[in-house]
Length: 253
Image (cartoon, rainbow, N blue to C red; front, top):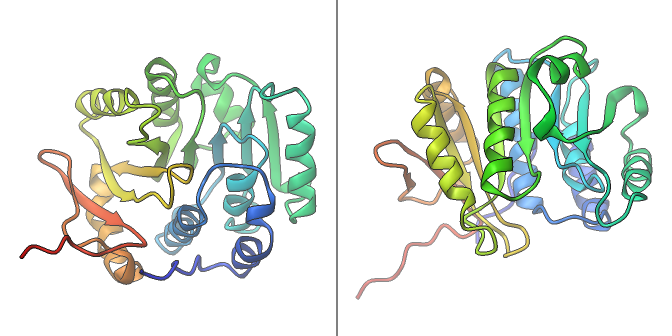
């Protein structure tokens, strides 16, 4: 098995080691480490600004992302905060405080992202476009399509969109929404696939603008050298990296 990559942030490493599994949620530690390292890569490439998570739930993944920000940057946690009960918002706030994300470093937004326009989301981000948007909202084709449209409209130059629960057996139609989106937005391409840890810690897709693909991929080939599955992902005709804890190929005899 390949090692979990270093996130590039001491605070993220501490949280992943000591707090991540204690916060209720369904995203994998492997994906959190990769996304935190991608945020560091953005900083190294001169990409700065706020980030957002659509579907923050109790904050497991959100806290890891927020710890990866630079001083003065903020994280937006967007959720209807009604499932499984309205107290989930209180648990989100408490988890953020417990694990070191102070109120001035974040914005808790109780709202339906599907009903939100770009101006409203950018307004929540102090008038700035977002450099990183993690979409983990309602798992339907219609909802994902709306979230993707919103994210694309609010994305900063060099920004990344991360899609959760891709190729999940419980939500097979989400891939249809992604294919439709890529066909309608040829300027956006998959940057990498983050492989699942388990059926709960499911696969993620990372998307970027086409003119940033080579720039990011060149750095990622070095940063994630131990996590690259050799064959990659074929999006017909676009090809991108697959990052996995299991980089073996099938034995053919």
